[in-house]
Image (cartoon, rainbow, N blue to C red; front, top):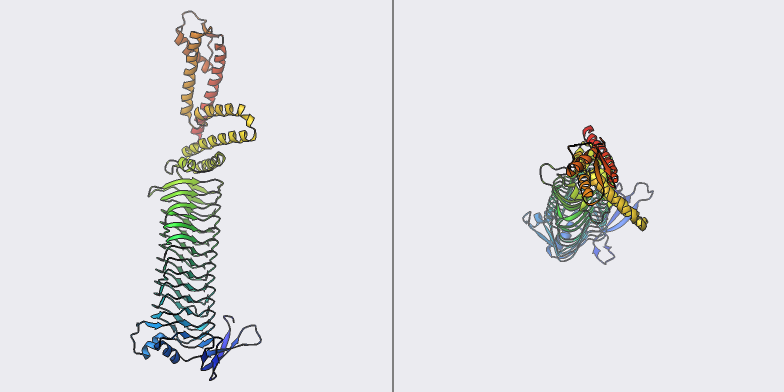
Length: 582
């Protein structure tokens, strides 16, 4: 109707006023509104009734209908004084309606300790120009409550300790002014709670210890200004909790120890200001908590010690800006940071999580996954597509990295190889060289399997040469020396190869015409076994004294053994030097 900066004047006339509903008021209020930027003022005619007449309606237990009225006083405290009642005695009101009304009270609009029964409560489409609303300790029973499309110029609104029973309540599209909005200890009952598109404006907003109970709760597109937003100890029941596209101001946002009950809690595309945001110790018994495409400001974000072991939590494509992020000692059924930008320290030392999704994240600082105060129970982590510019604090054995990656479902060898490669590079930079070797081996194993599968998919006929080639790499590069990461293993492979060729020479002399001829008389290695092992030794090490000469196809075996020995000695040198130089 008019803006927040409008001014007005009122003239009360002893003229009867009849509303569109046919309700008669003894006086007419002529409301003249001056709107900045408009040359002509707006003139509204409204009904007017004295407070004493309203009191008589309360005495008689009749509904109060103030639709299209000018109201300059409503105080149940004054009503109790005039009736000599206890200051905290409940006053029954059998219906209250003040739609399209103009409240202009110099004293607080006092509905405290009221018991609204019978008919609905509604002040929708009204303008609260003056007067703080006070509903402290009031109650609503089995009626709809409508605060929608209201402009509260004074932002001080007291709805604390209110009891709502089997009723729906709506603040949809309303606007508060600057001031405190207090909903502490209010019990909203099991009906639908709607705060959609509500403008809270500047000032603290408190839902501390508020009971939202069962039923859907919507803060969709709600907006908070500067000031603290506090849901500490609030309790939700079964039903959807929606904060989608909500905009929080620059004050602290407190959801500590909130019980989200069961169902979905939706913070998708919500925007948080530069204050700290805390969900520390919060709980969702079953369902899903979603922060998809949410944007956080410069303050710290804390999800520490949260209890979501039977719920999925996702921050997919959220922007954490410049604040630190902590999920320390929390429990999740699944936690997804898919496609998030983690530009600052992120603590993901979880105490329990079945599936942790870090795929496609961009990490520019530290991700901490290494617990030291408790045992971490994470079944699976997905590092696929991670762009690691920063560091990951993780330990191969302590974090059971092999199990975390191998337990991934529906992930192919190529993606697994990339994850191991990412971790391998991370371990190298952090100086965890043993862990680097372990990650490198798994990277090469999955890369080989992926290359084999890709080749067979492109050309099935390539199986003729790809399987032998794969087997050769598996035997020589992997089994013989773990891709040059284990010199002891290479040395063991050298011993095995030496024994293998020696025994082969023995069987060749026993069962074929091939032989090893002695060229020196009275050679000490003249026995069959001695000849075989001695000849194998000098051949393997490429010494070639010439005191024994291979005959028959043993010549071919000798050539193969010489090549094998030369290869494995070189392999050992590479693995050994690699270990020493690091």
